[in-house]
Image 1 (cartoon, rainbow, N blue to C red):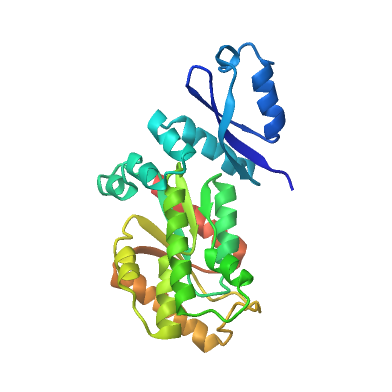
Image 2: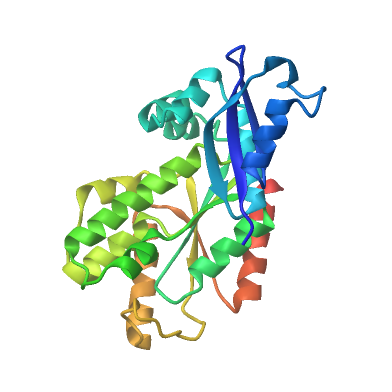
Length: 276
């Protein structure tokens, strides 16, 4: 697998330079030795790497590089210092920007019952539009868990999923695609534990800035050790739970049906309609 690195250099004059490369050590040495007299850092040497992040998708890396290049010095330093709270503050609070009608991107949530192709569709959409996307954290967490999950695990996964969504908001450009969000945890908690969690309810209620792509159950069930509801009657019931939830909070949603090609086409039509 090939890897790509977004990096920030601190120059001798205390300015910052942001770049992207597939070989961080080689690229740093080129900067340091002054291979390109026309480059920004040529007359600002010596330089040092103060931050870098690795990607396996060049499109994601380029998106991040462009985003950071547009940031203020303070915001770059918040990133370098791993000061997430300050980074959010300097981003002028994504929720506030949305309320003011100044959101720089459109947020799509691919949601619905298990085994409805959410992850596949999210990845295809992100690749199609060269956009930032957030993976489903629950699968990553559960695959590493060597015991049956408990309520505390579900709440932990919900918090981490939200945290990753908030981090992605800081680098999103035109579109942001989410492979599930708190709607999944809301239905999960109600189904498994008959519980409602106040902070999750509040977050969902305030999701007016999202467009939900609700995946239908009209594709074959695929067995998986992490999946719990293979019966058609349960799948129908859970699909209706998602639908009721979105309608309860008057959230914008579209039902996505058919095979994966049909689903992708439907999503593209929805996105195109937003640009019309």
